[in-house]
Structure formats: C-alpha cells, structure tokens
Picture 1 (tube, rainbow, N blue to C red):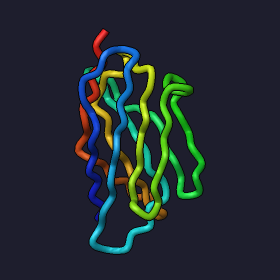
Picture 2: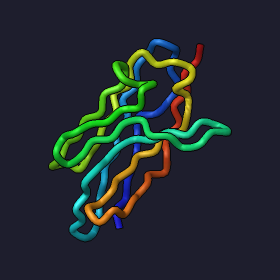
Picture 3: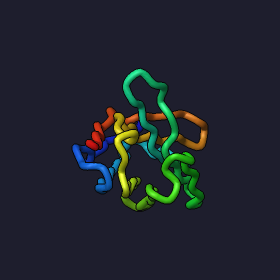
Picture 4: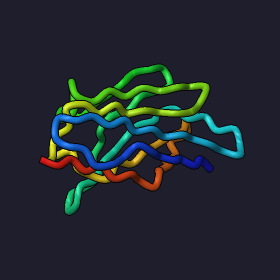
Length: 117
C-alpha cells in the first residue's frame, strides 16, 4: 500500500501561481514508477495534467504546456506541480497519482484549486 498526501491547493486570481506537493509513503518497499497529477472539474471526467517517470521523462496535457512544470524529488518520494499563469478553467480538484512497476495505481485525497477571474 502507498499513501499519498497532497498539499498546496487554494484560491488564486487568474494569472497567479500555485505549487502543489505530494508525498508518497509506504510501510513496505514499493517500487513507484510514475508519479503525476490529474484533475477533475465539476461535471467532468478526471483528466491527466502531468506525469513524470522514474527516469525523469515527463508528459503534459496540451492545455497546461508552457504554464505548468512537474518535478520529482526521488529520495523524498515527493512530486511537485508548479502552476503558473493560472486560468479560471484550471479550477478543479487535483489528485496525486503513483503507479508502481506492476501497474498498481494509488491516489491521493485531492486538493482544491480555484482560480478566480
């Protein structure tokens, strides 16, 4: 089992910035491969925002390219999402995700990001 704890959400004006953090912990030795962020707005499906592999490869949704940056502190099992130039359409609950080498997915509880116009 992997526990994911997110922090850093909040309310920000359009054009502002926020940084999300997610710490992964486990009682057992677990090989986490990919970590990333997904988001879900009211009435919409959960969608990928950005992911980063154990090798450092990244993938971003087209809607956030050039504005968001994902990074990872491997010794601390922590993943970050720096969000700049935020737009009202970025408003959503943001979920941290960790996927192990045997393709088991774990999710955080979610953190609310609200961007006012």
